[in-house]
Length: 509
Ligand code: ADP
Ligand code: MG
Ligand code: ZN
Image 1: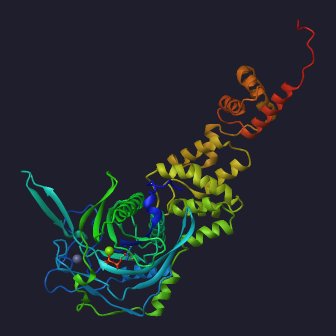
Image 2 (image 1 turned 135 degrees about the horizontal axis):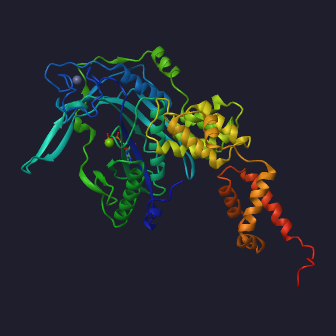
């Protein structure tokens, strides 16, 4: 759907890209991963959501957050992964000021979910991304590098985020193009939001995407040296950064350079990646089992309970809209990609079961979708704040019976969203009842034809002017005319005018 983000260089024809994506996502839980501190620290004063556990004080002991485990289980089930009967926690050791314990509690060789997959649609058709694992770990504190009043450079630390539950989802190196990578990240976000485990907002750091990129000569098996790219803050940057990296590596390899296994950052404004540091290997972390936590047994009944609570997943919903409701693949994708639209679509269908699904889809992706984009006031069920599904269904019904023109329907919608009020009362108050009376419209059509001889002449000369004339009639009737009928009446009159007229005895010619 989007244009290629980077030109394809000839060097690329000789290489195939191998891409693996790592996503860190903040789970939507009330408390942190291993303590009871609240995760509602957004906007709170620094270091106000802390305790001995998440400050890493000596002797403090962790306890496991059940809701966070369920978030990973739900994700695992949604991506068709295997859930082991038992899992455990491991310490990932490294020193950094945002990690006060000197280690992060994570999962190493026994993740909560393994061997999943996610199907995506790309401009080259469907593609399945293999997923290695999804595991649970804790977030770090936040470092803020700034300057004090005298201009001295200082670093501040806020522990509010320290110990927040973080899920890491890692793909197989099965992705081959920048577009596939972007589509995977978009679909994963949609799944996470649909099952309600994360808000997964990239802008707010709730979903962080890292890309591992290497090249190999086409037709050869072994992987090349990979580079890890970080700091991509939007789906578009994911695609651009990978496209840039593929191009950069292709040019370097062609020039005979030896690539090094670096971690690189993405500079969005310059559109380039740059070296941040050389990459650690996993043995540098000296993983070992976490002695302060017991292994976690995942009973089959628990897995089944989580599975039973899963809502309809995006892929299933898209195919239901296509196969059962007859929507186009495009409409189904647009509606399902935007939970607010899907909610409105379902609600209007429930309120107006006899309305054709296609009509509802057009409305939801069209006028309603625009109104949603402009509105910041949403309810928890995703409708724009004052919208009522019964009223929206009523609006569609009145359009389909010809009682309301589309132009005026838009006005009614805007007013309904702004002030509430029933569609019936808005139509009454605005005098929006559509004019479908042939005589009344005939008069308006005649007046417009008389007033616009140039447009009439254009029509006879084969230039398209019918739309203009319809527009003039709509204007003259304050948008109340039945546009379809106006078109018919205009065409009939223009055709009649083309037929040879009776000679006029008063004509001197
Ligand atoms: P780490 O923890 O060091 O980042 P992993 O081995 O878990 O690394 O791999 C991270 C990601 O890199 C995974 O998505 C994996 O599929 C991908 N990957 C591994 N090898 C390559 C490679 N040669 N080229 C591209 N991606 C790779
Ligand atoms: Mg990595
Ligand atoms: Zn705490």
